[in-house]
Length: 577
Image 1 (cartoon, helix red, strand yellow):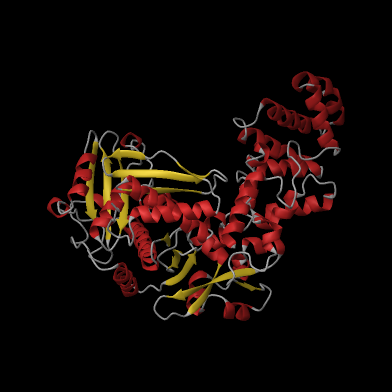
Image 2 (image 1 turned 180 degrees about the horizontal axis):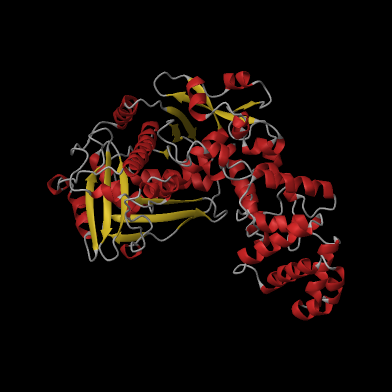
């Protein structure tokens, strides 16, 4: 018998069958991992592609089928919105194709006068919201792939939900600020949109409550008793040292949001989950599922103590932690006896179309504009919704100071490091680029480049500090090379094998004595005794310039040596068609 659940426009079996057939068509070879089932009506599951483990998703629900449908929905929303690929360099072939992302994309020359650029992208109010008049404004919008080949700014069309006017949003702006917020796949266009809007509302409300340390009213037990399965789950959470309390997070009936906090009296910590949907039952169900997604109760001992310090709980990094896995710090004031709001639960029981219209009106009433983009790949409705001022995951400043495309301009040079035609002047230029970009020495180089380097541990673990050591050594800047050799030893003490540790120990000591040629020569025998003849010879070759870039394998601009990365690109090619 088909399984229908509230908030869905098709039975779960039908949704799962559709998802599985799409996955098979794309040859993703999906692995459905064993599910977690900590309480009778709480399930969570992880699925991933055996072709490329970077294509994976998590699902949750009050039954195994609901959790599995949730996981597949997340998988396909991230495939069809291309979020799975947004952090990665797609290679020269795709970067130079007629279209990189979608056929309706628009490319804008960043060298045009500003007034001409903004005739093509955003609109006057959005330009004011996202950008200042700084010269770097245009640079922060350049597409990741455009940064490599100089193609420029790539933008995608979105429609404003009420006026239906089309506005082009730069892809790099979306990638930097919104992560997965506002994306959804559904059985119908309206179902997908309700889920996407609910997700945005949930995260906006959560952030508002935590930033402002609002105290929420408890939801009376007799109200929850209207939903016996959910009440039973709440009561089962009250076990041992744990106490679960359910709060109305609607902010006086503004938005349909529920919050459940799990308190642990054993260590004075607590953890909050939020859920949103026009139907109260669905909102609470999602909140309870979120609370234990990927966790058993025994995993709930390591959360943070609540704080009275706004600089801790209102910090953007803490709010990001709440977005990622809800493990951030909560304000202690959230739990005052006197609530800042009245109990005003929302329960809108209309069709998904009416729920969609209902949520849009709630958001419009608060003064926000909704921009929507719908996809219908293989008859599977997917949407992406942006609500400026409401749906950002990361601060607007990240466009300028933490732009995820910043490393892509280094790709051509770094992939040429060990090639014979990489001249000394090019190495000096690369050093200048890296220093001017102000990357953290601890930042992983190939992750910053958007390249999966799992096939080469030396590249996967390569940090900018270590790369600087090798670059300065290659141009015979021995003072800086020695400084970064010491940095490399300190940072990689637990990562390097003995051979690599020996190389950098020997390099650091030899460079320390290099200023005194007589001492350097006199210590040669000692160095051999300390580090071995083979290591000393290799270090000397690097100092003298007959060898370069110790331990780094030769790579190619074509990326064909990065097999896992190639698999990801192959999946992208299938999705793009």
